[in-house]
Length: 160
Image 1 (tube, helix red, strand yellow):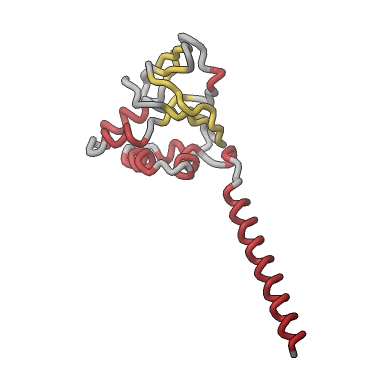
Image 2 (cartoon, helix red, strand yellow):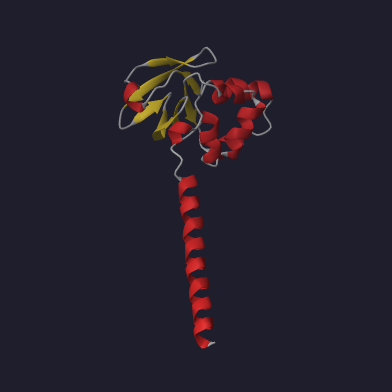
């Protein structure tokens, strides 16, 4: 009877060990989805950017960032975006459209003096002095590659 109890405990320990390791592996697998498989919108959701996602939704730009066309998103920090709360959808669309560039532009493509057209029809200017600046705002997290473009984190909101 004592051996039977030992065997049951041993089997329970082995099964528990197997289940814990399986759950941990599944969690690691889901966390390791390469960002290149995500769209721009999925990436910013996955990057825990609720204010940006909310404002893009209000501005009607979600379909654009969820499609197959290539764009470069210059993503302001959440804290800076909070200053825009309460703005009209039209105003948000103007501001955020000025943060979306046509094409897939990695940091190496952003040459000093380059003027790049935004989807709003305006343009932004690149400056390469002690890092990369767009209209005077520094890129803080460059080259987050996704399926339909690239995301560059900014240190502030672009003045347009």
